[in-house]
Length: 345
Ligand code: AMP
Ligand code: MG
Image 1 (cartoon, rainbow, N blue to C red):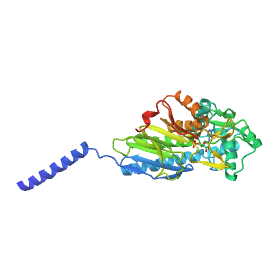
Image 2: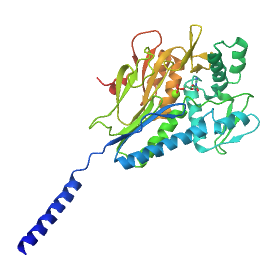
Image 3: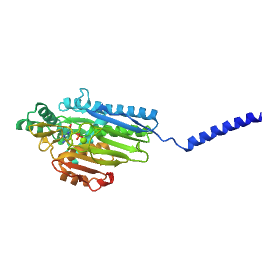
Image 4: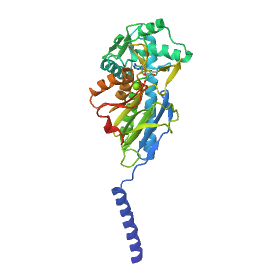
């Protein structure tokens, strides 16, 4: 009997001890990596730190959110809000959803801040130069002039209360390609945070935002910047010019190092200068680091248009924004005054 009681006592003590230990020593969360998936016309990847079941579920919810933003803002989708605006906003006011309105409003703020370098009414010029890239035939002066006359953020009429959009000029077209990825990343991060992940990273086409702990113990998130001179499409073996160490921040890179075509010997970038109505040629690669991806995305596109000196001058005036730039045809990197704090030594 005594022996039996001793066994019961020992088993109870062990169970109690294990329970207490499990409570005191938290299990270090693992990480789940979605791998690359096709989203928003490019590749997206999410890494989430947390228990596997929750991390997997959160990653799927975050991807669903990104796809929902794409369904609203893509100019390639027949039933997107942007397609509806582009089709009907000259004839009549078009009522739109809160997300698309917010992004359009943000884009206009960046047009004002960058003196028109960033401009989502760039659509007609994007179409003209995309066709040129396809056919390898340069557009004529007349075609360029005609497209340019339909571009200009001041031609876009927004009604904040009614959440409507209207074009003042026939043939206008919006293109959110320079800002929508950033907005989608911020929305995805919101989900991962609300669902209790200890940390996460969302990457859409090289625009990235992260928060919390990374998958390397006690480490921040490490983001490599690709050397634009190496036209390397294989993301796993790309040459890195430097590595950024990020906590709760976003980083976006624009430039024509990946997406350009040659017409004759001229590089035709997908980023266009609204003032000249021609492809931007000043920067091979511009990286912006700031808190939110939507701001990083818009500013990276704008900086590619502005060129290195104007871009540095502008970014130095904005608090909490830093830039790392690689100018075309030069060696060396241009950095804003606070960029070093993000660069891994
Ligand atoms: P990103 O990759 O973020 O630099 O965005 C490039 C995309 O933004 C292009 O493919 C166009 O869809 C659009 N875009 C091109 N030029 C401009 C511009 N000057 N302002 C705003 N968006 C632009
Ligand atoms: Mg951008």
